[in-house]
Length: 188
Image 1: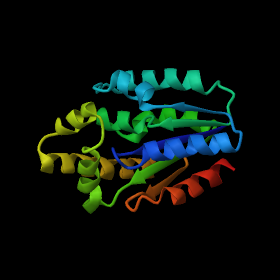
Image 2: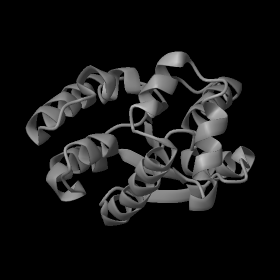
Image 3: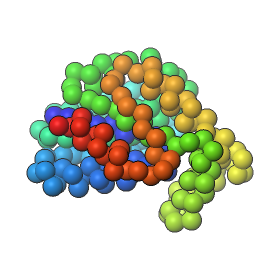
Image 4: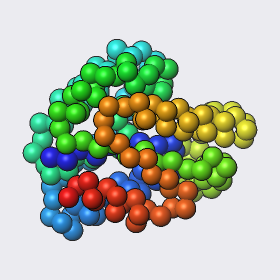
């Protein structure tokens, strides 16, 4: 079983890549399971306790690592929890150790900093209202841009310290075919 973890700030392309991965698995007759942030993040979205986050993640991993599928896709898994608990990747070493017992690869999608605001505010024009309100809860325009810029910087720093094999892919130009080529290579 190949485990793929997709991470990145809002609008970095996780959902597009997730959908392309599903399409790829179907075309290649690969069995797959997708675990979205509805399971990995949303049940404890406002949690700031490291232990609660790790317990939640361990429960999810115990459930899904036993599945017999060719590809297991996590649309966000633990990096957002590290961010929300204001901890470090080292505090989640037991989660990483569990993942490294399997064929896992983490992909962090990034956007050039000067383009983050455009991507966020363009997305606000067509995304659901609940998402728009969530983004607006970060403050005024400058505070929103600062929040996502700082989150991406932090994610990059933490991913580079991760013990899980990882690749950072820039999606500024939205070349998702290139991203898919990189990911498919790891699946094969």
